[in-house]
Image 1 (spheres, rainbow, N blue to C red):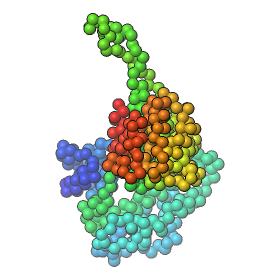
Image 2 (cartoon, rainbow, N blue to C red):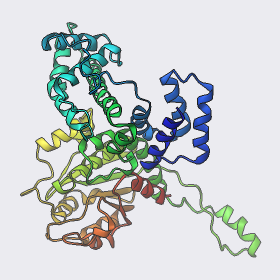
Image 3 (cartoon, rainbow, N blue to C red):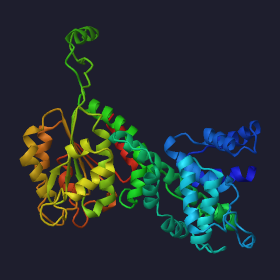
Image 4 (cartoon, rainbow, N blue to C red):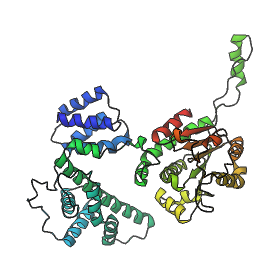
Length: 453
């Protein structure tokens, strides 16, 4: 047990979790007060000591399963000749057995685990000793399971007739969660097999992923960006508060307190005193580049915009490539950011001619159509890499916007070392902004929020 805890902590440190020496000692001590046979108690006890940020819970769970995983049901080379409990069940019957198990409960069960192991044994093509991370085995198994068809079959088997759209949506979400649970069970079972076959340390290295705050927006998959939503939402609230304070730096002059303070220096009002400002929510304008070169950053930008819309008095959202379109109503009417993104893509929004980035035309369109609506309570947030494909920059428009607005901030997903190289002209825009910030991951977004204090 001690060696497993040591391995767990070293791996968590390798991926970036801040674990001190005292917390290392506490993790060993806490195990003295629980039943070590109770895997759930061990997991939550260690998590209470080692995890200080809820965004790190997923990373902890993955590493914990590697070092404290249950024994795999999938046979290894030493037990390949042993029969599997569901080996004699044909494919159609196994499918029906799976549907029945998912109808009963959405939580992992021994039956679901056995079905997952059987499907892996039949379709993954596992080769003991092969140096793979398991993604290939997962792909081959899920190709047969076909989660989308599985969800449709579950909904079709539900005989209840519901006319209420909300209840229908809740029913679909319930079945979707159960299908996702089964997918996770397949992934966990493959991981257990790999650990049994090659050892925890080797598998931990192949499955190593960055923490949510370290995920690079430009290189992450869209699925990973979607997984960041629970982290982005609370950060948007903090950003709202900081922007509100930043746009109301001083209240009205408090003459009475100023005169009173000046008495210590002979009545000369050297240091004026201001009333505490009323922090009314500012108006936010978000302009997000959704061109192909920053596709995953665009997904993050839309996630952030979606989260911010309920925090400001008014949020107006715009997407652009070589043209610019407002998407405020689409975000307001969509239940999820996925649905909003699908509508934006289907309608071809942000495109003027060919969809290649043209910041100059996009900014000019924004200024001509919406510039007069910007006022001293407006904050403009531009999200993009400022790569213009050598089109006209029209940087002066950013200056025009800045003179009308309270602030103009620019978040750039590229490393500063790449700024003003090639067709990047961020330097031309920078001189007209309140601030330009490198924003390659959530950690840097957090740093931007802190600088607004």
